[in-house]
Image (cartoon, rainbow, N blue to C red):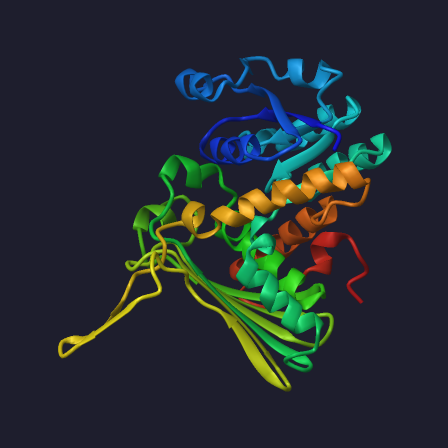
Length: 338
């Protein structure tokens, strides 16, 4: 098996998680990590080489692919630079918040003939994959409705929220991608309602912390997503797909599957705390699939267009919230709204 040599940009929370996973993968070598604020003790403990200069990754002929775990505002520029250097690319979401900037990055990838995979990791979660299989295999008949609940245990820091692009582009974007993934269909129309129910400071920066989004899909089905920045009981991640022959659901994962029943009541564990715990396995599998696409010279399982389309749905949701009426996604895609 030919060794695949990687370089990484960024070693924050997500970068460290990915690095730990990659070090356990056979036939893969993480040669270099670039981060101006690198945790040198962490890197030294794992035996990782580091640099402050990202250019070292792009100019290294041994590095076949670059993994982008840097701050979101750098993603598009780094994708373009990596593509021009002939490197395959894995990039955490989002590519960018501006559709035109995303299209520039995708054009650079296409021109260079390299691979780009976007980090919508939830697609690789085993429960979600089982839901997808049931839909594709017709186990629930004709799909009619998708219902997604996604609630965080606590809001991010305000400094992050100010640059996040808002709840639809930062948080719900994962759910928009799941609607497309599970349905195999595009979203035609979005109607979003939102409020500030968790922290007034979030409203003061022009954002919301609670939202309900309904969608009409191209295949005729409907989808509903409810979001909150704070669920007192933990990270709430539930999915149901309903069809003409039945439904399939993915429920919250807990630390144990035990149920304590006494005279005082019936008790189970709370959901796992947050996304690193809930989706830990999916982060590993998405990188494994990216490596496989390089080895087998096949398209990545999540491509640049997936990253663009989720952002377009998010922009339509934000517009719907502001206008108080449904908005067609084609308004932001540049397609004929007719």
